[in-house]
Image 1 (cartoon, rainbow, N blue to C red):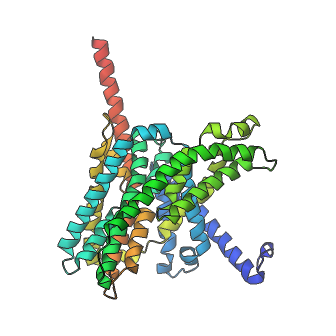
Image 2 (cartoon, rainbow, N blue to C red; image 1 turned 135 degrees about the horizontal axis):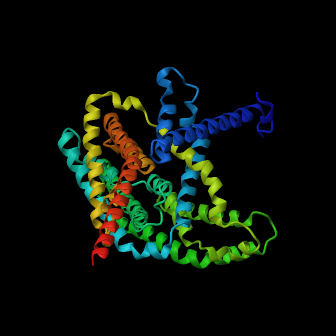
Length: 438
């Protein structure tokens, strides 16, 4: 046993646990930086390398190397990775302008709505045509799972490419939050219908559906309105205390509080973290800045640099390459993935402002990542007449869809943003020549 770990509170067993977590962090961080460095050299966003190296680590057992299997199942590693994506969305919120986000609110709502309706319809259709042996409830569930959107992957790519402050990015982020609420509502309704059918009870009541919607809307509006009123007071109280590192501690307390409240009402914690970042302004910590302290954005960056890559490598490690071994599963997965991508690409037409890169908006809504995994895992817990609703092959199809939509997004966004930049440059050159001619 490593002597430096002897401080563990629970003796040798505790020290071994700590050693295992430290080893996991070493592996995850090295994999993240190596993978990120390699793909950046190839002109791709770092997150793609983190995901790919995570897949490699998670499947080394196929080569007889089982030393890293604990990374996929260890609860401490999972919690650290989830804190990482929570901090990522908090950082994205901090770097977003709430006023400008509200200016594109209508576009975000339309984009999100199209991004839910189209994938749900396509998912239901594809499932009905290619899995006719399954019940209508399975088709409903497949459609509901395709509604998911993971803002974490897209936000990271937008940050890597320096596109976070564009109008397109604000529409994507706003739409992803609305999409999460709408997807939650659809999933809750579909789950309620399935459970009602299984028990022979009544269908989900209208009031139950309305209650789900009200909870989501009340949280989002309350977070933005009440939060902006409370935050200055919290920072003012903190500024009067004499302890050190109060600015970062206060900001993180607000972030985690909002994430916790979001989870309490059934929303993804990352939605609460994003809302927390939105309500915080530079003016809230002016007293700390006058003392010469760093801003919250600067203080949070080292934490995200440490924990965010952990999230993406862990997410990649949970991918089972053996899912790709069955031809019939692969064929169905290809069709479902195509439906998932086309359904989200269609939402780009919902951007109402002129001169926007609608293709990038659509691609930005494609990844399912952890949200898709959550949706798919819920299906494994649903029972219809005492039997699992989702078969192992159907679950594998959904997992492959999640993997592929997550992996294609960084590459697709990189290409579409570069394409938009070239188009804008060419347009500017034409305008310049026409101006010289006149």
